[in-house]
Amino acid sequence: MRAITVAPGVADSLRLDEAWPEPHPEEGAILVEALAVGICGTDHEIIAGEFGEAPPDTDRLVIGHESLGRVLEDPTGSLHPGDLVAGIVRRPDPVPCANCAVDEWDMCRNGQYTEHGIKALSGFARERWRIPPKFAIGLDPDLAHVGMLLEPASVVAKAWDHIDRISRRAEWQPQTALVAGAGPIGLLAALLASQRGLTVHVLDRAPTGPKPALVAALGATYHTGTVNELDFEPDIALECTGAPSVVLEVMCKAAPVGIVCLTGVSSGGRIINFDAGALNRTLVLENHVVFGSVNANRRHWKLAAEALGRADPSWLGSLVTRRIPVEAYAEAYRPGPDDIKVVLEFAR
View 1 (tube, helix red, strand yellow):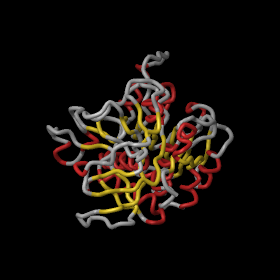
View 2: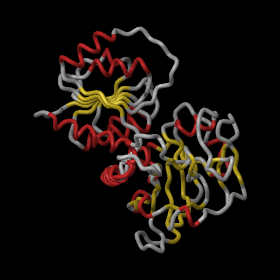
View 3: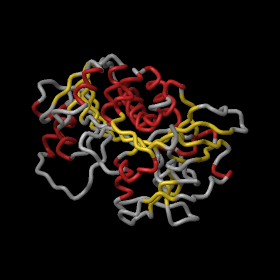
């Protein structure tokens, strides 16, 4: 079968393997036919050789962690042939740590977790894959063309779940949310904010292209420029760019008793001038909470599936700006200027 693989740590080693081995039954009871995988910045970083880890029995890694497939067989009866399914990316560590022991592998404390298409587990960019029932999420048939958005949506669902938990520290009725960044994570964060009935603002540097219309379709307001130029203080802010200057500005911009969630991952090595004392004063005197969020556990994946099920299917479909057949895989992994979400299709 065909699979998209890399040699981890070797830049530009991406290739289409035409005779990749079939998934071993030990990988999971549920056999899945791949329909599509979404492509994100993590894939580009792995292709650039910046990180990634192959499974123990091979020197190549099948990439792809934003999955969408159709069940071929499930002897456990948890799903049925023909059902749409997505595979949870992370697996708990074998020790396990206290969090992994209670299925909160997204909060793993010792770093010995594994991840499909990223760290020591084959990914989903192959024609067939297997998954245990515990790590399979069934999808509504209406999500047949956009189900690969479940993985990024699960990251956002976790962020909002933690915001909701933190908000219970005091009597608090948030009204306004700011999302910095209008990539897939940012737009999905704005979707979930709008589903909560908040007044939503999205800040991005692109003045044209599809993003302003996508934000407007949510009933949200689209901004360009800088965080400091905004004329309001958000009760909730989600930073989805990882740009150091934006991260710091968002942390300082929140309203009193505000909550700031950081989902963007910054690259190191960039030094900027910043008044750390002013930030500390703001956080302390205004009772701010700033926290980071990455990955998701099964509960968050289920919440994400529910959120996508409530969304306008045409709006979700508009997030996918390019659909590329697997035969043209190199084109799919070549970034385009107006890309939001690029999808590599295995079956149509």
